[in-house]
Structures are given as structure tokens and as C-alpha cells.
Image 1 (cartoon, helix red, strand yellow):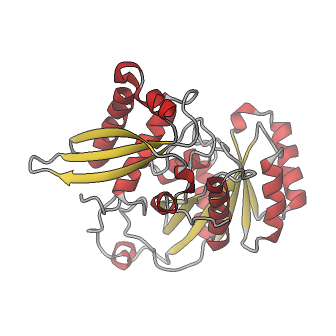
Image 2 (spheres, helix red, strand yellow):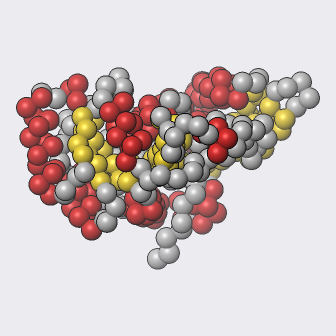
Image 3 (cartoon, one colour):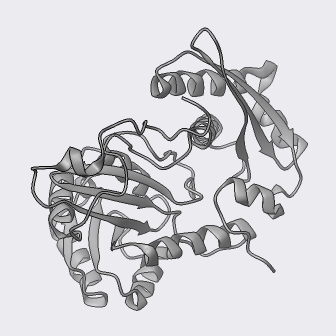
Length: 320
């Protein structure tokens, strides 16, 4: 697998051949939108059946649209995990929110995910109002239902449907998988008829080197959730396939200040070693080959105002 390979190979039979004799095929794009930490990335990973989007307790973990590809019955469903929508304060925030709404408007279906515990407060209410102007068919998904009383779930669903006419309402737990099969059944039969967009063994359109950077960024946030500010970024700079079947990966963690570099390194390098070990282990499982991972921490002041960093993240640089 080279640095430009997608997560799965493309050596499978053609889509038409793979689906031949199985009846009409369906395919389409489904954009997941919601407030930060509503559980979008967890749900995409659950529906795809593999990890394609990183998850952490830190808000706005997802920065650009990640596409996860699932096959259900005769349908290929391309889930678009969008950044959480919130009130932007910085240039990066504006780019993420623009990306989220842009992804929604490009999809065949929009799935609005609500954290049932938080309900229609703050950003969730703002997003719901914004959905009035979106023409695509929309479905409502109430997540984390295991933490809320059934009567409160019904009230929440009714309140949301009073504002926007959703095609269908689902109540699920992305963590346990409860109710997720009903979502997949519905999408598989309602998406348009047509050929599949991707080979049937491909689960994401994210280049492998970008996924590797995202995996390390996840481990960075999980290890230093309280200490490290949101403004950190990871890039894969080198990817070398070695003759012994292993791969050498060099990545750079960018922070904005020298004090943040010390946090990322940790006392006697303990933090960076822990992050590297966790990331290397997961990458080796995904790649199914030994991984030699080398992490470097660099200070780049105001990297959040650098157009090149936005391009690396798959975001459009907002001017002004």
C-alpha cells in the first residue's frame, strides 16, 4: 500500500459484476450534521463497520468532511461525516462550519443528529433553524437514547418535527448500535437507484497518509485532552515502504507556542512516546504490516492563518 492508496484496494470485480443478479442497486450520499460532540464520527464508524473518522472528547475533533462507505443489501451508502456546526470564532472555525453546510447541500439525504441529553439547546437549535432552507430530504436521528427517558425522547422528536418536516425519525445509540439497523434499512431502500460510486471493498475515500495523520491527532487529543489547546495539527511528511514489508512513517505535530511543544513532548518525552505507541499500534492493525512511526513536534505560530495548512486538512481557506 502506497502513501496515496485509499484505505481499501481497488482490485475487486467491477461494481456491475459484483452486484449482478442481485436486483437493482441503490447509491447515494448522506451528510451527517449536528452540533459538536453529538456523536457523528462514532455513528459513521458504527454504520460503516470500521474506523474511518477519529473520535475524542475534545469538541470540533472532525475538521473536514470524511466519507465512510457502507454496503447494505443492494445499496452503497456514502456517509459524509461533517465538522460539528457551532458559532465560529476564528478563521479555522469559519472554514469548518462552511465545509459542514457545503457537505449537507451536496448530499442526497441529510441526517440531523441530536444529542438526546442536550436536546435542542444552543447550536442544535441554530442548526435546526438553518435546515428550513435546505431542499434535500432530511431525517432526524436522536442519539444517546440510553441516557434519556422515553417520554423525553418523544417530546424532543415532536419539538424538532414542528420546526422541520423530517421524512423519518430514528432513535439510536451510536455507541451500542441500538437502532442503527433501522437507519441502514431505510436509507438502503430510499436512496436513488443507480450504480455504486466506489469499489465494494473500499470503506473511505481518505488517502492513507491523511488517515494516519488523523489517527495520531486522535491519540494526541486523547492523551492530552485537558492540557493541549485545540490549535494543534498533524501532517504526514514521509511514507516509505521498506523491503522487509514494514512502512516508515514520519509525522509532524504543529503547535502554536513553545509552551505547547513542551506539553506535547511531556516530561522526559513520556507524552510523545505514549502518543506514538498508541498511534503506531492502530496503524499497524489498519495497514496489516509493521509500522515504524517517528513523531516530531514543531512550533509554527499562527498556523491557523496559513492557507497551506487548510489545504492539507481539505478545507477552503476563508479570506478576510
